[in-house]
Amino acid sequence: PDSNNVSGDYPFTLQINAGGFTDSKDFTLKAVCFKFSPDILPAAVVGSEYSHDLTQYLEISGVSDDLITWSADSLPAGISLDEAGIISGIPSESGAYEFAVRAVLSKDYFIEGKCSLTVYPVISVVDISDFPERVKAGSKISYTFTTDSDVPENISWSYSGTLPDGLTLGNLTGELTGTPTTAGTYTFTVIAVNGAATATREITLIISPAITITTASTLPYALTGSEYSVTLEHDAPTG
Image (cartoon, rainbow, N blue to C red; front, top):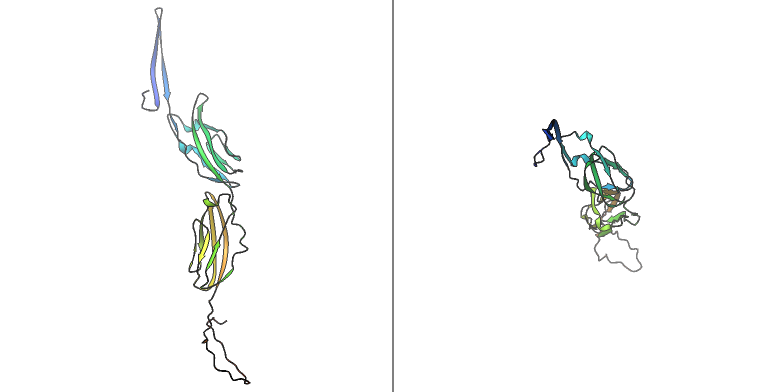
């Protein structure tokens, strides 16, 4: 075989001379190219099913990959690696893990690589009992959603559905701010993402119409000792 990592069958003849006696025998050397280049694996979430195929990181020629078996050390709790190269399970502890994985061709020939896997904790959007269910149009609002994550700075926020006109949700802060302008009932879902972990919470917010008293500040004269009545007007919708 040459030094260019070319797999294949290489026949050769070995001849021996000893004390006037000679013998020769034909041999075939099977050269195998074998490379394992693992990467940072897709993240997992505590309590959620996880499965990933490590064979995609294996390059092999000169022999069937069916002959390869797999093993690993120090996997996250709840995760295992089968002999076919599938890492799977339900992780039970969060953390950043690095472990050695071996692709084994025979007991004397294997290749090893390091894999990294991050297991994220489960998160949830915490109690929102103090969230204002009703806000008057034209009134400023500021409310910060939170989660039970130990590292809130790693949370990114978004929403699905429709926010009231004039309100925005901070992507990094989870703060709902602004001044709503249009009355109505709005339903949207707040989404918090921490790596591979996602939490959602459906929110309903009622924007009440702004009310303005339209009656002039100076009222009609009133005479002492006489019955007085005047109707004050406003622009609130009826019904």
